[in-house]
Image 1 (spheres, rainbow, N blue to C red):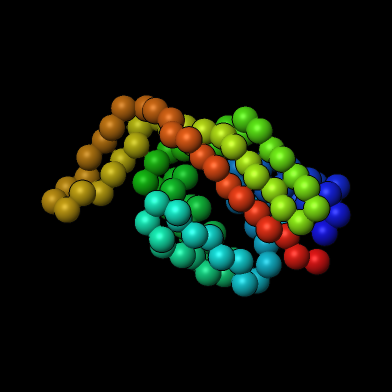
Image 2: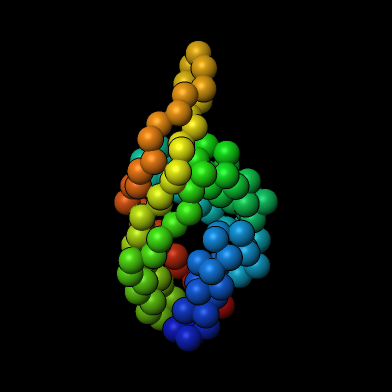
Length: 110
């Protein structure tokens, strides 16, 4: 994938607030580096993104830096939320609005 095509695809993904996954390969894998959890395939990725941005949090991502090279990309930003709703063992709890660092890496094929 050319640098321009990769930048275009990532811009479309970012602008869609992580809902346009049309540029993802059918066998896409998202790995949560903090837990090692993997979400395989577009449907699993869509479900995970929906959960993170609309169920667990009322959140959106703010891009700070986007670096695209031949076949690779890195996005640095913040995931910000209004009220975060977390599931604990016993009940649901709310936390104050806040933000957390967000780093995404992407390796393109084709």
